[in-house]
Every structure is written in C-alpha cells, then in structure tokens.
Amino acid sequence: MNIAQLHAIFLGSNSVSTDTRKVKDNDLFFALKGDSFNGNKFAKYAIEKGARYAVIDEETYNIDDTFILVDNVLETLQELATYHRNYLGLKIIALTGSNGKTTTKELINAVLTTKYKTTATVGNLNNHIGVPLTLLSMNASTEIGIVEMGANHLKEIAFLCAIAQPDFGYITNFGKAHLEGFGSIEGVIQGKSELYNYLKAHDKLIFLNSEDNKQVTLLKDYNKTYSFGNLNSDDAVIYFEEANPFVISKFKHEVIESQLIGSYNFTNICAAIAFGNYFNIEASSIKEAIENYMPSNNRSQIIHKGTNKIILDAYNANPSSMKVALESFEKQQDTFKIAILGDMFELGADAPKEHQYIADLASTIPINLVILIGENFNKTTIFSPKVSVFKSFEDFKTNFDFSQLDKATLFIKGSRGMALERVLEIL
Image 1: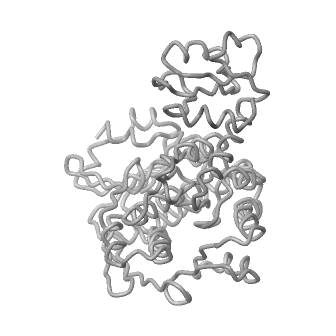
Image 2: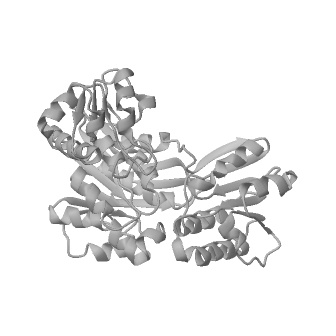
Image 3: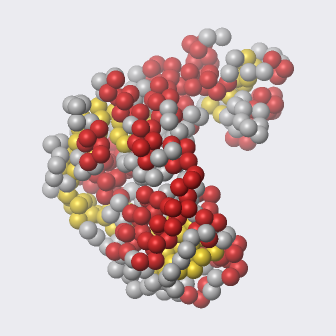
C-alpha cells in the first residue's frame, strides 16, 4: 500500500490513535514501538475496541485485511503527516526555542483564532511523534497550523522541519536547556537555528525579535524577516511597561493588560502581537485575545490557597528560565516571599555548576526564604541562613516546618520530573 492509498484510508477514519486506551470507533491505529513496549502486540485489541484499521510492522500480527503491514510504523506516520500537510496546502507556523515555546504558541493561537481557523500543537506534543500527530489533527477547515518543535539533540529540529515544512518560523530564545544532549550553549544555538536554516533554504518568512542581539546577528544577511520589539523594529513596535504582578504592553493605541506575570513573558506577548499584526488582525482584537489568555498547566499560574498566593511555574526549568524567573520574582511587591526551587534536569556535566549558580543567585536576591529540593541542589554549598536544602520531595514534606508558609507569596519552579505542584497538596 502506498502513502496515497493510506491517506485515503486516513481521510475516511475518525482520527489517528497510538494508544489503545484512547481508541475510538473508526480510528486509524498506529502500532508504535518504544524501549519498553511494542504496539504491534496491542493492534488486535485496538481493532476490537473499534479501530477501523491498525498499521503494524511485524508480520506475526498481520491477521486479516484490517491490519496494514508497513516496513516501519513510525516512519509511515511521519510520511503520512507530510503528505497530509501538502494535501491540505495550508500555512504552517513553526516555533522552537529554549524557554517559552508553549506559552508563546498558546498566545499566538489565541490571537490568530480571532480571525482564522487554526489548529495548534496540543500541550507539548512537539517531538518526532507529536509533530506528525499535530499535522494529522488538521483538516480542510484549518487555515493556519501552529506547530511547536522541541529538541534535545542536534538535527532534531531539522528533521521536524522536513516533516512539517513550515512557511513561517520563530525561535523564542537560546538558553541553557538540554545541555546534556546539545553539549553546550553553542550546541543549543546550532540546534535551534536548524529552524532558521530550513526557512532560509526555502525562502520563507522568519519572525525576528529585534531586541535579541544573537538572533539579529544570525539573520543579518537574510532579508525575509518580520521584526518586532521595543524600539528597534521596522515592522511591529511594541512597548513594555513594568507592572506588578501582570505584564502590560502597548501596541498602536492599545494598552494590553495580560494575565501573565514576569517581565520574561513580555517577549512571548510581543511575538503574539507581531504574528497578529502580520496576519492583519485588528489591534483591538489582539488586545482582547491576549487579555483573555489565562495561563494553565503549571505555567505562570497564580493560585490562592489558604492565606498564601502561589506563583506556580513548575512545568519545566533550566538555568536560563530559572534565572529570569527569580529576577522577576525579586521585583514582586509582596510582603513575604518564598522561592521553592527543584532540580533542573538534562544538564549533564554542567549540572553541579548550574545548580550552584542558581543557589547563589537565590541566596543573594531579596527573597525572605529559599527552599531547594533535589539531589543536585543537595550537593550545593550554601552560605545563607535563609536557604533550606532537602535531598528529595519526601525529605521536604517530612522535615520542613510548614507553619512558615503563612500569608506568603510562594514561587514554585523546577523540572517536570520534580513535580513540584505537589506542594499545593500539602498547603
């Protein structure tokens, strides 16, 4: 069966499924493999649950004509996604970067949906499986697709670009994320810039933050850009106004009061404004979309629990995002401020140095109390009496005096694996 024939089957199906627990009637099931599972073993069960067809790559499981045998299920899924993307012929926006990808994607989607039918990456389905699934979730009514791309090694973004074939692209920033895979900050820049390399090679449009000197330098010889920033932009001039706690920006004659905290979110808002401006959305509609956007999924959420105000930013963390978040928390005009910080993962040999840097930073800025949790933070040298260190979350839960968390503003941030949102269950 060729890819065109498989695409015809896909169009006649309800949706694509890769998890038998979520299979619905008339789905097209792809039997993916992983280090600890083999989807081929569950293909028969997927059919029994209502899937129309199951795509498999092991002859043993090829029972009847409801099973489609291919050489490699994952590669077939990826090829089908590219075929479908070209079949629809829609505009694709690709986003990557070290910090703020998902928030920026959500903001851009909120703005563009005021005028267009969009389909965007759900959550952070941004890898070699998530990007194809995002593309296959688009249909004939979709006018603009917004695809988030994540990576922790070189060549991953280039591979995702080959699948999604974007028409527009934007890199949020270059930071100290996934250093274990990229090897260094230079490796991060090289890896994330694979998006720009694809766009330049195909003469596509790049959205450029004119305040980011590194990106300006990288794109100085490429003239197909749409720039935005405070003062240095030729296309979308957006002004930033320091606020407490929410970010306020000014665009054209509109004052936009977001529900996002932290000055680091200003660039994310700028990007959304720039995309809206480029796609001819009225400033008043851009304002309404951004002001109505409410952060969720442990990303810059403000939660009130008992007598405490909680700034929950526990979805993920790396040294760059931790630094700017702490500096922003320092500026919050609250009476009693507590930072609860968890280990940052995937830093490789840089982990001791980077955790010590964050521990030192948290010790010196004007925060009343600092709580460090995790094996990496437990190895740091602490010189401040306001800092408490716990080797694990259970250690913290068992030994910390929670009576201190009263009428306070808590900032909570750590890598996803630390699951620091569990603090809310204790309060």
